[in-house]
Length: 388
Ligand code: CAA
Image 1 (cartoon, rainbow, N blue to C red):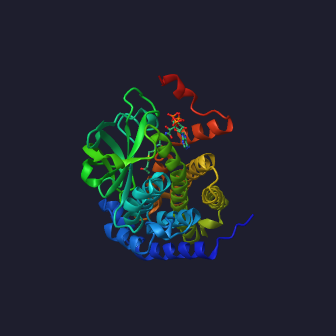
Image 2 (cartoon, rainbow, N blue to C red; image 1 turned 120 degrees about the vertical axis):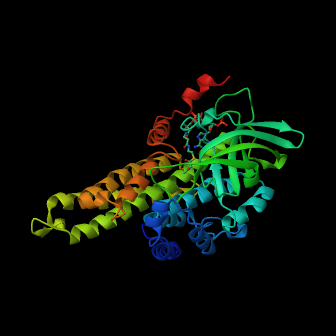
Image 3 (tube, rainbow, N blue to C red; image 1 turned 90 degrees about the vertical axis):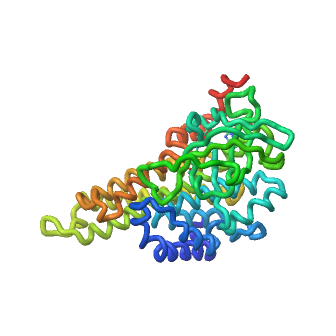
């Protein structure tokens, strides 16, 4: 086993860390308070190649591996989780599936602008009536002379208001009401209408939008096999969940760093609070759980780099890291006491931002279902009952 990062992985990690300290840290509180999408910072990330970290060079990316990408997401999310999710969805939920499932023509047309960060990507699966049960989606795509008429509504689409390219899922077989009979499409900003920007508990520097689509797109917008788009969605989420795990590790690390520094400064009962066992135990648990979550995350990323199955490993990493981030950001508030509950320190932001990692790209309940199906060898039992 090899636990050392390779020099080029360390270099990308350092580059991102420096960028985050210089360009994100000074603004993150304001972006959160004012609900600002950091267009300029995202453009600078594009300039550094960080919007196509793990995209092959011949497609306009930096040609690094998935481990490097996970390191980038941890560093960005340590500074601002909203920036983290913007990059995560753009990369692993929009760009990578186009590489994995696209024809040579589709890869050549859509991937380079995404990898260079000239266009942002989004992943439009969720609908008002189809969240955890993603296969219940009702957006329809009907074959017409010019290609496909797609009509429906999508909800909670990360990057929705800023994306130029959307990976969108629609039902192509009207005889089905489940995951079977769904297909994946690549659509442009011009094909969709943003109807609402969501008000959220946290992640205020990211965009979460509702969309309506009623457009005709050409035949060649179908991505992957007809009626088998759910495989595109699921294998995309297999990789995406590793990215969310890295995001959760970054948020928890941010909270730990603030709590550690505070504990060494704050005096109570005549001593630094870091000298009290109650605080020491909290810090020890934080440090241990962050390390454990990072190991699960990097192991899943390492498996992905080797082309090995990641469904179970990605679900485990995301499940553990997200629940850890929620627990440990709460502990950071506890260490800071009253100050932790105020806007004077950033830990309340970390707590609000951590919560979503237990929900998006599959809730903790769905991660447990995915893991259980794998360890019990049970794939899709409930679904078969509904299919005609
Ligand atoms: N890889 C490839 N294919 C897979 C797969 C995987 N990991 N898992 C399932 N599939 C395929 C199956 O083989 C099957 O394909 P065929 O019909 O072509 O043979 C098809 O997908 C349906 O599979 P299931 O019967 O297992 O589907 P299901 O309806 O039982 O659903 C589920 C399974 C795990 C519950 C799934 O619905 C799920 O993951 N739900 C959560 C949805 C989710 O994560 N949403 C996140 C939204 S995006 C987001 O959050 C982004 C963001 O903003 C940050």
